[in-house]
Length: 126
Image (tube, rainbow, N blue to C red; front, side, top):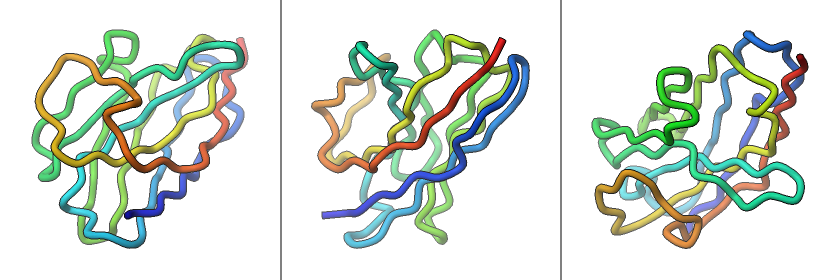
């Protein structure tokens, strides 16, 4: 198993930027595909982005494409989510997740991921 901890959330104005980090411990980080999900109160957990074990095949939800960038540094056991041009609709708790045996798709479900962080709050004011 792998343990995940998110950081970098906060309060920003619309149009601003934030960079989220997710650090992993335990397991072998490079063996996991890594994803970011988000969840607003009362809503389902929503896929945002995923990156392959090598970091070469990112996939984004339409709602964040062109604004968010997922990347990873296997040497640091860290996955990042760079969020630009933030909108109030981006307000949510953001979760980092790890998966094994994840195949290419245009979208992913939370059930595809076996390990989760505790989440970090992102609030975008208008």
